[in-house]
Amino acid sequence: MTAPAKLVTLSRHIHEEQRLHPEATGEFTRLLDDFLIAIKLIRREVSRAGLIDILGFTGGVNVHGEEVKKLDAFAQDRIFKAMDHGGHLCCMASEEVEELIRIPDPYKRGKYVLMFDPLDGSSNIDANVTIGTIFSIQRRVSGPPGSDGTLADCLQKGRNQVCAGYVVYGPSTMLVYTAGHGVHGFTLDPSVGEFILSHENIRIPARSKNYSINEGNTSAWDEATRRYIDHLKQKDPATNRPYGARYIGSLVADFHRNLLYGGVFLYPADMTDPAKPKPKLRLLYEANPLALVAEQAGGLASTGRERILDIQPTALHQKVPLVLGSRQDVEAYEAFVLGRR
Image (cartoon, rainbow, N blue to C red; front, side):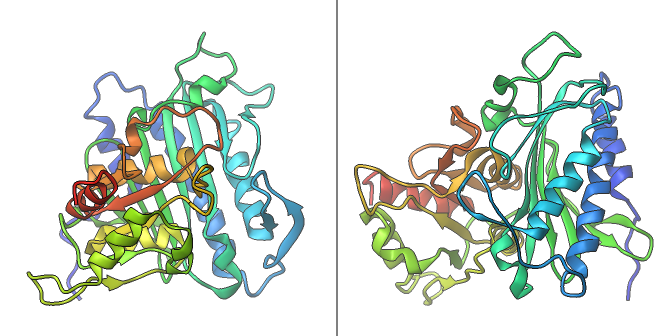
């Protein structure tokens, strides 16, 4: 096995990124260091979930009416406790919590906002399928400095994110993130407890050969989505093959595979009642952070009609249709939705 050309830990990489900003104080770097502690704790529990009493449900229901898994609750608790006292955040928001999460007294309030999905794909936990954590960081827009964060700090357009990424808990644990200068992946070496740079400057292929969508929802799709998927199932003149279907049912896992190999992920709104479309995925905790990663890697993220990163959020748990991945594939879907094909 050939040794890597250079050995770069995630902490070192963050410090090097900080040098690109002469005005940086190091606060953002320390924020991410705190976040990594929570991720390592979550990874530890995920890796032995079948051996300890952490599978199954808590008996509670979250803001979306979904039963809360024990591991969901553990991940939520660890991220909150790792981030509430560092002095870097003015508030937090989580997919699992209905209201804005305030920094408890007597801890200092900082200049950043953290939004996160503590454990994406949790319905797959008991089946030992790959799951993940998704996160987004923004600068506060309310003031004065040192005061509590407000809803306005969270309800910013996705293009305002200063950092976004996700963690994959699979055969190995991998963290992928962008701070606006490309997308980089780090794999956890459990023997030393460090995330090591394994995928530098990830670029998603402009066009792919695979699509990811839950075809069990076909009857609820709009006509444009049906026509687009039918189009993908026809032989591609360039390859003489149709697109392949690759769907895991865990957003992080599906997106991660597509990011590395090329692909388009689609979760259109449920159009069973056309007068009341029902999108599924959360703008702040899923769509925005993954959209930033996709675009920084050369891909695209859209609702089919507008760029995800340009949407003005109106609520903490706002949901949107989501199509993201290889740029040309997303643009082709938009052409179907907008009637150009």
